[in-house]
Length: 276
Image (cartoon, rainbow, N blue to C red; front, side):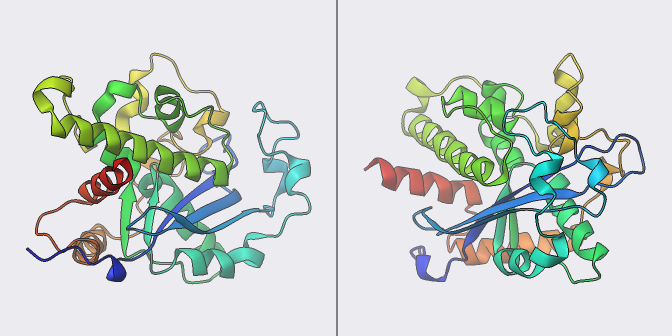
């Protein structure tokens, strides 16, 4: 079997958006903050980062005060650049790379495409998408709870989620490293270490909020679990499903030379090398 050629592997960009909270159906999401880190695929080290607040056209969509200690307020974005002002930088960091993030396929990818459409500019195109929500739901299961980033971070003692883009993407990467390490150790001694956690199918991604027993707060619905009545969220995918399949096949060929080796196995390999 050919060895994995790390020199030809594409870089991975973890990114995250913070948005306003639409108050009723039909109102649009405005991107208020963009944050991203570019990591090398063979060492998972950060090689580039970028973050910026973004001023929406309608400042009234941003609260004067935020219920979160690190939340974004109207005063914070008043003098920030518009999306059009930072579109070139966002395009350059996203286009032609593997995109990664938590629930990005159902939320962040959609918002990126909407924002570029709004300024009549072509949106960046990924060569592959790694949605950590789907990966972890399938591979790690619900042992950590409801699969929100805040819950996963708490499970591993990584601190409190700040709901600020750059902090959240770095936390996302650390959560993936911890999950991959646990899975690697369990695979090494499955009869001793493996807990009887049944992996959940990726279909649970769209319905995870139903398991809470209570509705999320208005501000919590701003990004990772907005109500399905808003903008047809649950059905909105920014790229055609056929093209996503082609991109997935393309990135598999770039990221892994081994036949049938899924992306999570590469993350497991990196965790193994870090443990040595």
